[in-house]
Length: 260
Image (cartoon, rainbow, N blue to C red; front, side, top):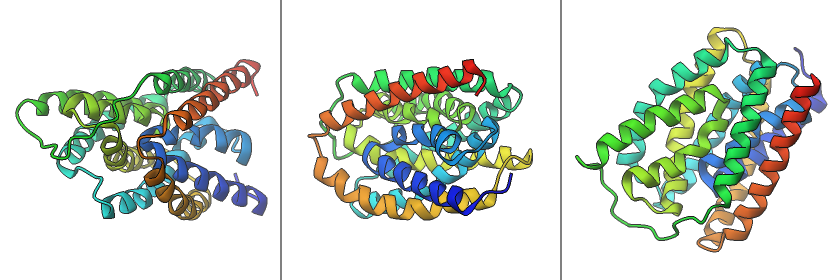
């Protein structure tokens, strides 16, 4: 599928929006990437949208991660361990997704989106422990959580990344702000792994990915100051974003059921 200049511009705007949300909400910000590509940019095949979203979000996450790392909000040990084990799950999940027809994949994705929104409406732990380390107690939980979350991220395109933040919090005791920043390590790793599997099957469009990445630089630059400003007062923002996700999930499901 060749893209028009208008579609490339819309892809850049979509990349900017996703990168901004990634900067503010961590892995959960990636969930709108596939709907944006399908219904705003006009990508016709759900598999192509999933593959492109994974690659674009991975590049956008890398931009946002650099900013959070400079601010000292990334806990590299647990984040890296979580990502390494998750890559195995992401490969398996992405391979399975490519064997499912587009309509069923979209319905599953809509269900995952609804779960994202509902999860974001739940109260979040706001306190952050400053010294989070990988140890014998946390390692088994990190392995199990990383494998499971990686599989979801691979299957749903990086939209499954909403599980990364709660996975890190549960496995390590990491607070919300640190988990959101540290989750970007896994978003990059899982997105790259998923994109590689789709590239091997011929689903990726380089021009679409580059447009998303270019927009992502702008979105991350706008999102990082916003993330720092929101701090612990992000409850209203999370609720509004959660509502948007649930509404989008309903729309995606209706379009899939209607065959459009």
